[in-house]
Image 1 (cartoon, helix red, strand yellow):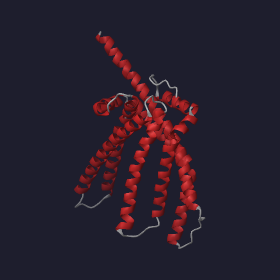
Image 2: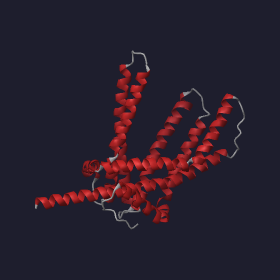
Image 3: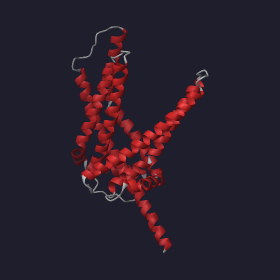
Length: 298
């Protein structure tokens, strides 16, 4: 794809340029990302169907009720992260001069770093929550206790999300720098992302809001089917009514979830393009600042 990356852009300019890039190169984008997008859609459908089927199980046994959903959730979560790294490499490969093999390797590396950082933050948050809970162990559980725990949990989630934002710059710079070393430059990349956090936070907020709004529209057929399944299940469990759903409902639900998730992944391509141009704008400002410092020193 022909792109002018290193250029000073505002948030609205990054969004507009990303729209143009996706619109002009839509066929090439589909060709380059359809496989990872389809794999993510299939995994999402499998996970969604498994969760739907598990609603029928009210067995108190550990093996059937506790362990299987937990193991399935962990495996699906790890699989989704690996597929996202594959998908991200495929999108960056559309605008990168590096080989796909290198982009894939680097995508897995930076994703692993982000995963470790996220898990560390969640572990610290868990320790803090546990300390709060333990301080109330011999006290009555008043509404203020639940408010405190909920407030701390929300604040920690928001802090984690905020600290993850500079990685949007780090991952782009790492994948788009053919000779860059993640081990030696990770902290420098992250600090540069912190310095450009204004644009990155704005991009994160807008792309998240747009993704939620578009997702509600795209997943509407699946949401309707899920509502029908839930209503049928409530009738079966509370009134002993027979299921009024057709025999092909499960196939329809899986097919709907695969299709809608695949379409939604094109929205994710757009979000990557927005951060691609946000990176270019931050990089332009960084280079201009460096040139001014050199000129001043001379």
